[in-house]
Length: 308
Image 1: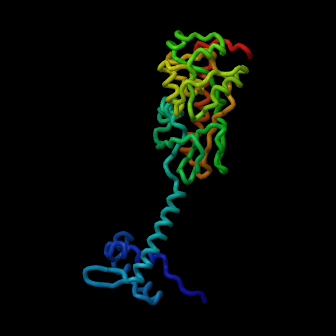
Image 2: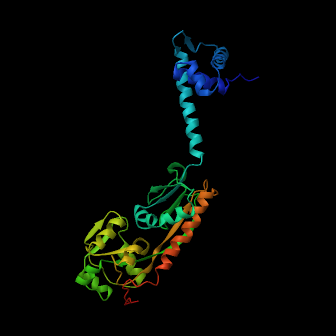
Image 3: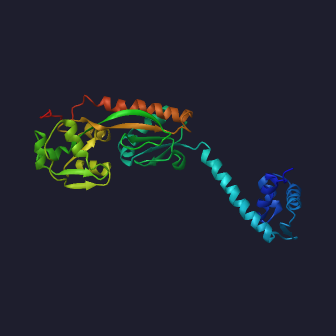
């Protein structure tokens, strides 16, 4: 026969007693009686053949052997708790870049809350690779150029349309009638997509060397703000400037063309069947393409592209 093993209940009773230095407090934590705690520890000492506690009227201190056992048990119970928490359903969390959050999610998310007022939604600001379990993410919006987690459920959201934008005032000061006129303007870019101007040239069918970039910004939202404040032209995804185009804060002299990237949705497999995840997925798949379609026919001072 194999050697008898101590019961998990007895080990838990002993660890709680040492941690609290009190059988009474251990009993309160574990919702049992003081006598039950005492019996569990006595049985554990008899099984192990060693005294674990130095009992006195005022305190319950561990012996050296008891302190060693309690330390190991505490670490083991903490690991068990961490493992359990890692697989428990957490709050619904949407991950996206700060620019998408500021320029699309925040202006539209009230529509989701109106439709699903009972759903609690949290956000994670990230535009790179993720681990669903480690980062506690349910759903992520990403560019198709980012490598998805190997277990991600991927849904197409929309093609990314890109084009140069500037403020109306800047366009009056530096009028452009054809793309080559951009050589006489200040070109802006973002460090998160240094090839944006080249992407636009290729997508729009032009073949000429762009002048040097005047200023780089760390994020799209900073780049867009710089363009709106009259610092120059910036190539941006149309999705991020819909409100600015509608209000006239920005203009797009050459309209927008479909770029090489697509917007995709990653869904965590461990959260995919949850009703709140399904509701958010359906809403994003519906609303993101719809917002782009809604603005397709609006006039943003689009001029015909030459050289196509």
